Image 1: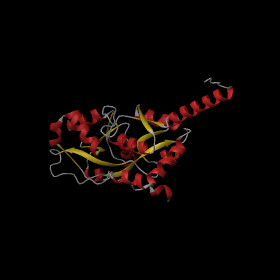
Image 2: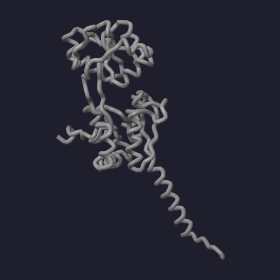
Image 3: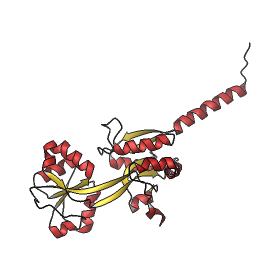
Image 4: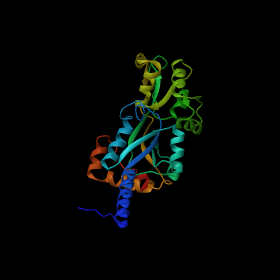
Length: 259
């Protein structure tokens, strides 16, 4: 049997291939992230706790997820410019709400606690907010690129500012500062990594001083940013989406966005 391929057939075949390629490309979502173990890290098979959540959600939405690991400032700036469709996990601030598309649903909760040495404060520290440091005369150490530094400045709290977590923990361990504030899980992991497992017997924590939702930030300058934000919110509104976030106790919507 002879087979004749016309020009129209070739055009149709080329069009189908382009559609297939476009479909394959559009089913992949690449997020810009940085190192924040155990929440997001290139050293774990599933890229960390928060990355695992994002992967589960977007897989259920029909997408394949990839992560590009950059510095945190690069992750935010390149997403803002539209070179990446999204980045996570971030606190919602007025500036970020202006520069990014922030969905109604968070992907996690951050529990910020103060870490201090038992021997320095054997009776414990009753710290429930940053302002308590002024009353108690407690001096914190803060990392230059972290948001706590700006809070201390705003509140008039004198703090020692260091370049990175390693310096902060060693500064605290040497008794050159009284307290270090960090997300609870991240803090314990950093403490063990930097000071060794025995240090867990030396340090204790305050109650949470903040309990804040952490969000995916979608780019308003990426062509897929608005669409993916809408699809993410629509999926999280479904029974399947609710069943996923219920396991993490993060199904509360960001009601402030709508008030």
